[in-house]
Length: 242
View 1 (cartoon, one colour):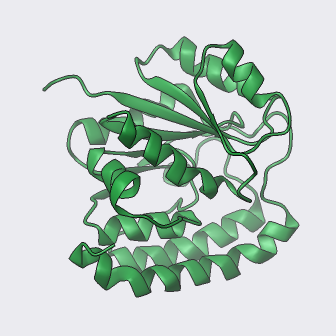
View 2 (view 1 turned 30 degrees about the horizontal axis):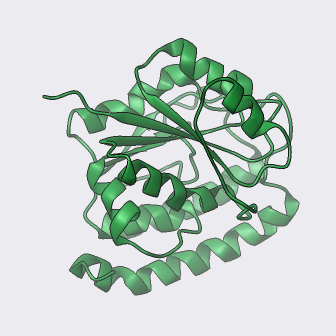
């Protein structure tokens, strides 16, 4: 098999305290993957620090409101640059570069089209906070029922996609994606083979997560709306009408 080009899209918003260590971890691991920073309108030195390390950057003019607002940006970037595999990695330092081959491997071996790195399968490392785990569990149950397979970590930022999924979101699906429920269901309806693999994550060392009390209250409402909206698109997606 010809060598497959892999892109790691590091997504970040105001992560100047974490971004250098995140990128250094990737570079030191020497996986042979290309890296791009997808900046969600940072107001600090996130982009400046990444550029100093030689990392190409794509910046949003304004913040999209959540990390999901970076999805279509990195899919379009990966598609337009001809990548075979695309990974998402959060810029807050929670994801470990040495874990990336675990989510890339099933795609390289043609075992899956969309791979989720789950911290809840082996329950090692940072397990997130209680309130967030509760919400993740509820929506994991709902999503599992819809797609007909068990998923556990539907908000995981450690994900990988093959060329078919890149093309679907990078060229065919011309709408916004608002959360990971929608991303998962759209991929399933488009025929993607989905797989979860165990990964280890760390707690962020600096700064605060975008998930706060306000987001916690809005998370279930937005999740339900996005699931219903995606289900209404199901027939068109399965027919290839986007």
